[in-house]
Image (cartoon, rainbow over all chains, first blue to last red; front, side, top):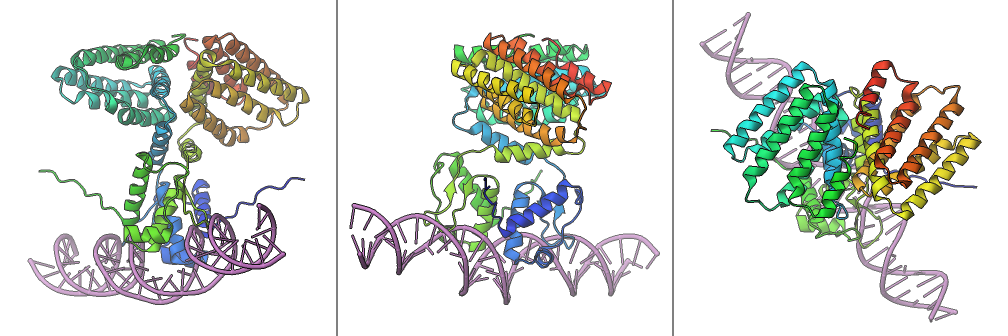
Length: 249
Length: 249
DNA sequence: CCGATTTACTGGCCTAGCCAGTAGCACCTG
DNA sequence: CAGGTGCTACTGGCTAGGCCAGTAAATCGG
């Protein structure tokens, strides 16, 4: 005979669960408004601090937003990757997590995103990618601080063109993670200029591959580009770990 | 002249931020205890409901746990993927998200996880994978409901062997997402038995590839296995989208 | 020395309020 | 009649003070 632990549930958790369930079921849709706190306390039969605690966790998880003063009450939010981003950032920041693991993951996502983009891109997508690429070249010529931002929006345009939202969002979040957890800690190198030029070269190759709908080439160039970018900061073992992923391309 | 919106911060948010920062900086480590609510309200100069609201969001984000009655106070938690899991599940549940996008993402993660596993596995890892594979075969022979669970732990063993925590955790979460968002909605087919046998075949091929340290083959068999498993439920366009990822393997 | 009892404290919850701020209405004015 | 303006009734944010069931650890009795 097996018993299972009963999940004692506090009052605010019960409220959170009911509202989350209503959102998941579609009974509450983005833009809809919840009753005010005072009305909710009547409906749930609890005190105001308790419904406020429930609202706090719903706010923290990005489900609702409070609008002080607005008689229409709290708003049901559309999905936003903010919470996903934060939790992935936290996961990547676990102290047993190595740089290589993060970079490997990034390569996997971006390479396959580019592969999909090469096949799924529309002409509009290609136009956007081209525009971002022009920006990138201009930034590389100026050699000011704008290159990072230009590279970001170039990569973002490609991710969008993959027409896979999971890949696109995860890639975007990862770009942010890499920026805060890795790039920021890299010592500035003297030959920034050369690295910029190299990055621009890979970007151009990726663009061409996507234009030609050559997924394999796109994935390869992305992989090589990322590896080259960080190669100077990695020891041989780490470089080798990144090289593994190139297998079969 | 440009002004930017000031980020008004409520009292409880300020508390959350201070504690989160302390955790991120390592000044607060897992297992450490926070002062009790009453003491915190003195330290922060706010009322108890306010510190309680802060605790609620820290609990919701998996940073701390409350221990009613314990004089040592709330506990700082070690990282757990629970929040990540929930947010990824929510992302995958967005109503513009198609089955194909989820399956594509899953293939990307699992295939590359297997590729890494083929190279990074230790002998212990291989032993674990072999044990899980034996379970899988036994379950396939019995043809009872246990096959799904056995397949899960086989895949989990492989993910662990990748020695990439990001890949392992994300893959695990995705397996759960696929289970709840896709598998559950598939009509039970009459030829379950045949599908089981086919899955077992791919699993065996993956195992052999990992044993041989043949990353490319491991990735290929995983990809084929997942595609075969869902092929019967997909239309040609969808099948084609999954086939894209096989390019270059 | 060990087990039972006490004690001091924990977090969970409640009632009863004050406050700054907003949305939308009724109201004026041009 | 159109458009700006002030008012009002509400919103959420926060405070104060208190009760309760429960727990960890110290204290006490054997």
